[in-house]
Image 1 (cartoon, rainbow, N blue to C red):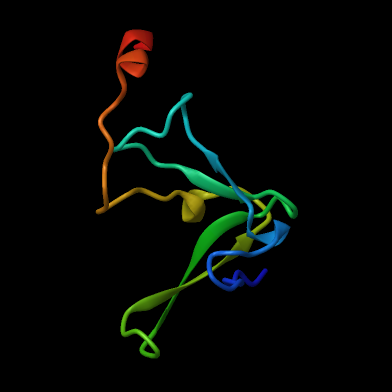
Image 2 (cartoon, rainbow, N blue to C red):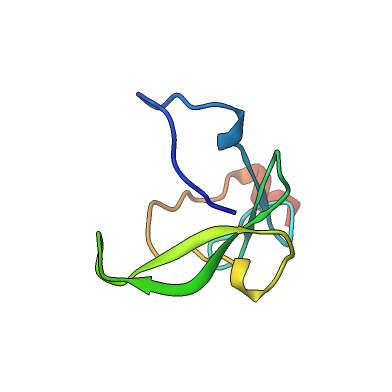
Length: 91
């Protein structure tokens, strides 16, 4: 199933909605997560295909009906937020 971006000025539609599935209540920095499409229930997955255009080394991403090792995602870079005091107290 093809996955594409849609919208103008940050506005899209209900087909842009994904659910983050993580092993606990919160998405921890070093944890793997899955993204499940809210309307179709497919998982955001990598096919293994790699392309030279438009971005060298870009990998194909699609929606896969079944969960597998190909639909785990892990943050490699970005902005990380410190856990709140409430989160620390729960642990």
